[in-house]
Amino acid sequence: MPKNLKVKKGVITVAGLGTRFLPVTKSMPKEMLPVLDKPVVQYIVEEMVASGIEEIIFVTSSNKRAIEDHFDRNHDFEYFLKKKNKYDRIKPLVELCKDVRFYYTRQSKPLGNGDALLCAK
Image (cartoon, rainbow, N blue to C red; front, side):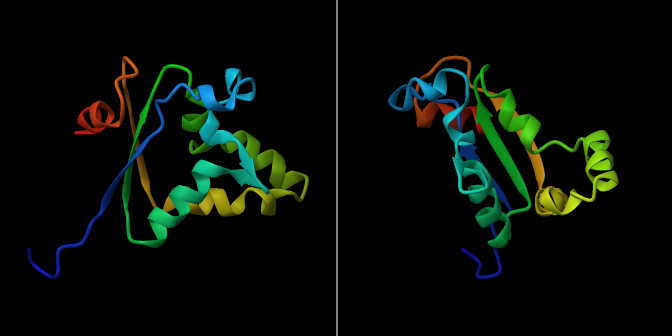
């Protein structure tokens, strides 16, 4: 393998049902559970971007829209925060999302990580 080959794409498999964290995961994806001031999945994305990843593919399931919404820009909300002088609270997330391109695909059945990676392919 050439030494100058750099990994630019990453996959995050988040389609699981979260049964080990019930009852909280009944209404919130486990990846969105907060650690201090942000969801755990944001820490993962930050580490991937810091390592040079430019494209991230999320393999999700039908109940994981919160993940897509979290990494999607909401210009009206950003404008509202700017007017209230609270934009600094979301600015790190906005800047993070500028550094990476997100893709989403669905795993139709809970068939494990191997199947999820095939969905990403």
